[in-house]
Length: 150
Image (cartoon, rainbow, N blue to C red; front, side):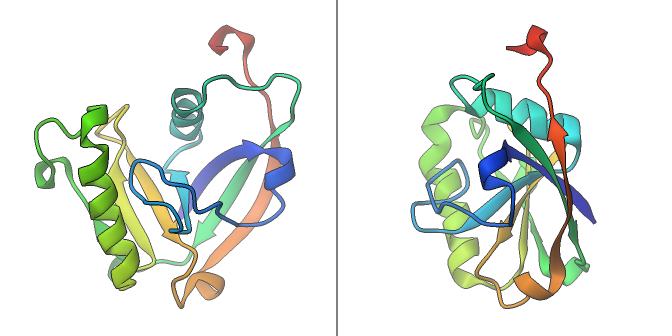
């Protein structure tokens, strides 16, 4: 499986996580968010950042994950409440992700994108026992933002 992460160049040298809370995790839970496509990763980055710093370099991280079905916990839209896409649902989604992270049974959590629910994002648990064995940074590439998006 190939997934994608876009981040500022200074943070793209290795697969790390800040542990900062986000939609599917709480603080001190070290997960890497990745998109199932480059375009979804770019759209997610645009949606979650106040501004893209045009004076900074960005990198596309191409990540290979040697995952089998047993390495993935899937969350589908039918598993979620009707209002799951709203900001007020953050605590519920964070609890779902936190439970997955703390149980530490699978390497990946596959979730629907809030922006495009038919597409998938992946959370990679950097503390999972198979992280270093199954997750590899294949390469990084320069990533430029089209000014029409900014």
